[in-house]
Image (spheres, rainbow, N blue to C red):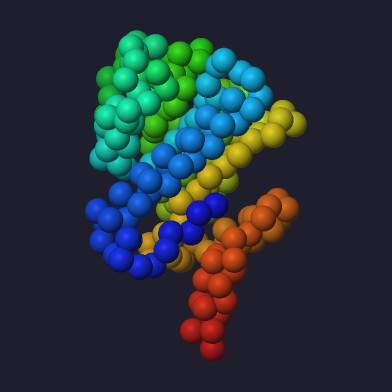
Amino acid sequence: MHVLPLDSTTNTPAKMFAHKLRRLDHFLLQVAQHDKNRGSRHKSRVLLFANSRESVRKVYDHMKQSVRNTATSKGKNSVGNFGVAMLHGQLPQAARKDALADFKAGKSSMLITTDVAARGLDVEKLPFVVNFDMPRSIEMYVHRIGRTGRNGLVGVAETMFGRNVDQFLAKPLLRVLNNCGQQVPNELLELTKEKQTRKK
């Protein structure tokens, strides 16, 4: 979990988006290191959720322009050697079907999607989920992160939590993390304490 700082790097929507992209790049470097450490020639799959079609498109474009994605496409609807595909409700049914098939088959290592893929998407041995945007409800958060760590396997869910836009979910998120025995960032604890102090 990454709680975005409340400073000049996130004080406008454009700056917040840029900060999230930098955080995503850092996370993907960690995924690459993870793959290298386990001696795998195959890239781990990453399922990334964003709240809007516009955000999906922007993250997809960012990945397309990244220097690590300059090789030939792997899947029909993928770009680059990381194999990036996108999925949202406005895409033609055939494109959605192909993007999902590429991801499940490992031709796309990363699928960038809206909540159209949060429920009912069953990808075997999916190790990483990224919430580029915190969902609008804690129930959807649980559905999203539930795509990883299934059938007793270890999974990692990385969430980008904005202090100014996601604060209303701080308390229920803290409850979910505690119930699952997950590590709670100090920034999230401080945020819930600030909220309680303001109510008194």
